[in-house]
Length: 89
Image (cartoon, rainbow, N blue to C red; front, side, top):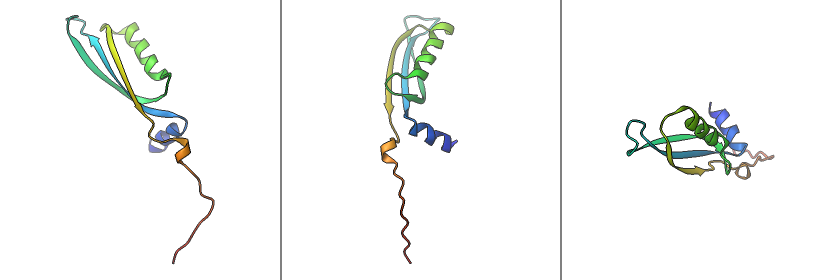
């Protein structure tokens, strides 16, 4: 699992968190919050868009507001392979 997450991050995926505010189906005047988190590609966020498309098509709660935050935990430029080996006695 950790190896898969690391290789995913090297491909450009970053940890994305979205707070989704939606109207409760039984009480439309009330808003409820849902937190969604996954690795996604910035800036288009295809996984998040797919989830929101699913939400609007299959779930009853009408979306009110979506706030997105992301942070690139590992960037490809930060990983450098070193070709030398030093031994200390």
